[in-house]
Length: 110
Image 1 (cartoon, rainbow, N blue to C red):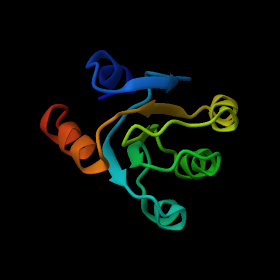
Image 2: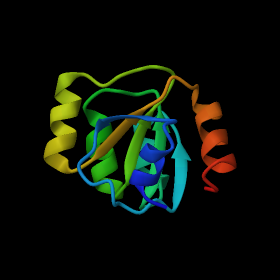
Image 3: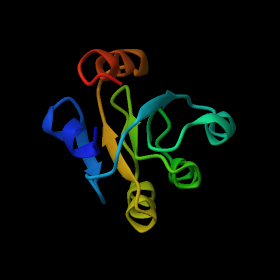
């Protein structure tokens, strides 16, 4: 699947979309950046409640296709700017992380 397919489903809100054709082959949930940095698979969706600029660096290092910021949290201007510069897609959802992951598995087959 691609990031565009997630956006077409209307379950997630686009914040920064730099490349909606990026492949999505899996997912990862986590808020501790060092754990995500060591374990998130390439081409994954990363679900987190973190919204500060450091999430962009972690996503860039791991080759993550998109960050989904859950629980209604939103990134600040610095995070959005960094995501645009680094080519990182950011989406948001009001769902808690578990419910967002459940939706991705049940509706999108991840």
